[in-house]
Image (cartoon, rainbow, N blue to C red; front, side, top):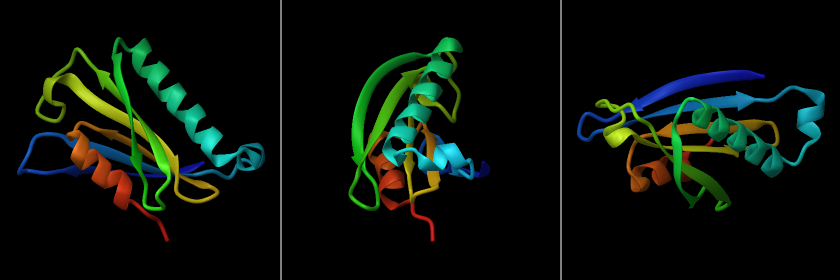
Length: 123
């Protein structure tokens, strides 16, 4: 697996986002249904956050650039700083193509998080 990571900050509002573009090369993982693998990765990320003491406080859906539903889990952390207002953030992961996935951890509001999911593509 290879990943390219970047951060999104907006000085006009509080919050930030971490985006990781993951390319899967593993023979077994590439044979899995991409939606099922996305869900597996999301469950693992949420469970890891819970092990860190964070709490799941909600779930919602957003449409990606292809109009497909993306699961988003909202978490609450005991930590709060300028990049994570009120300690609340969203986690999502979805497939961009058959071997490429996007991981998003966003403390932006639901609208801006949705816009990232809706517009993120690779070519």
